[in-house]
Each structure stands twice: as structure tokens, then as C-alpha cells.
Image (cartoon, rainbow, N blue to C red; front, side, top):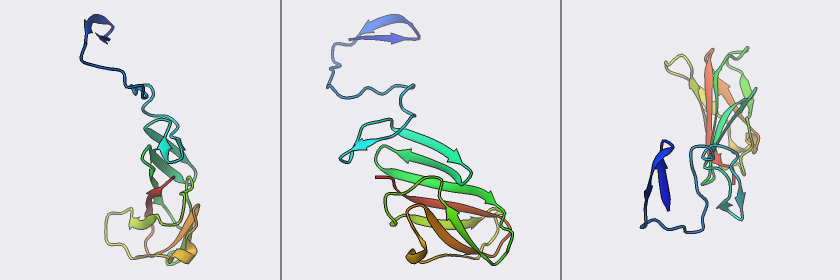
Length: 137
């Protein structure tokens, strides 16, 4: 096996062997994650965003979603957050936090108000950050 550094000066590495598995490098680490039967088959990390927030999916099945600096129009009301992408089930954890950095009084609603694509909270501040962590497979 020949290893090339910066396009020049190839060196031989006889102790490295090809195990037949995927080879990851800087151009395929980030991309679409996928799985087949619980075995990762795509990239290591996938990132995305839409009007509902941002997300990161990892090849091990972990997913993190967030919505930064949401400005609700009715303080003391309820917010049904449509997640930026779906979780595999409703066992994910979610929490609102105060975007101002001070004490926040919020209530993460019971599981009955949680689906794979949305969750509800009640908030008492003007700017809210929403976070959720769980599994995409």
C-alpha cells in the first residue's frame, strides 16, 4: 500500500492491510447517513436544516435537533415544535431553554403530546431555544 502526503512523496506501508470495509476520508465522512438492519451503510455524520430548525445525525443512530432563538408571540402559551426531521420513536428527550441566558420557566409536555415529528412545551420567556436528542434508527 502506498500512502501519499500532499500529493507527493509516496511511502510504502507494508503493515497496513485492507480489511474489505469502507474507507472514510474527508470527502465522504459528512453526507447522507443510512443503515441496513441496524448496520451503518452511509456517511458518518449528516447535517441539515429547514424552517423547523437544524439537526445532526450520526452513523450510530444518535440524532440531535435544535431550534435557536425562537420568538413566541404569546408568552405563557404553548408551542408545538415541528422537528426538522423525524425520530424513530417517541423515546427522545427534549427541552426548551432560555435564549437570553437567564432563568427559564418551561414545561416539557408529557409523552402524550410528543410524536416522532413534533413535541409541545409551555414557555414563560420571550426567546426560547429548543433541543431534542434521540435516535433516527
